[in-house]
Length: 200
Image 1 (tube, rainbow, N blue to C red):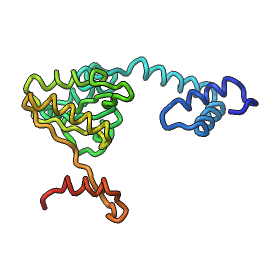
Image 2: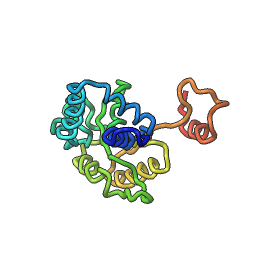
Image 3: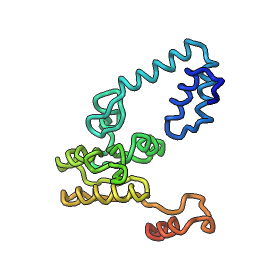
Image 4: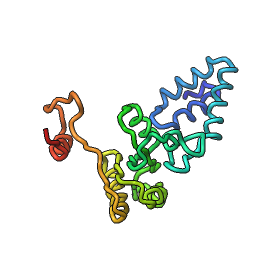
């Protein structure tokens, strides 16, 4: 922000800009919006941030974010506990839940393997995953990491740990999106669509 702005406003914009997906222009708009709010609303906003940080923690079972010891998915007796869908982050759980089609449970890794960034297996929630499947009640683990170099490496590494335990490890199919047009698809997407084709 320009030098003509008050220092607290500049600092507020910089804090917003430190969030993922927020550029400096958006951060400035947010900072100015906060300044237009009444003091009570700003206080409620600040309280919500502090309350979330203080009271939301990892589920002791699946590592998703929750305010309870066990999250609502893990404590739901109607869910199929024999199938675990492994995802990178809590927002991926929300994406699957929006489909209303998946009835298994989840495991959140909180990252993907990336040696260049210093993210090694011990930084992920893999030990917790292995502990969950060790009791023999899990039949299938679905690796639902993104189809990136890091996502594929993480899926392959996890599979190498799980297969010796007699667990079926599957990977999400990737390819053409619903409604996609072939001429606009890139080569990798078309290759994945061919590789993951299904019988009719």
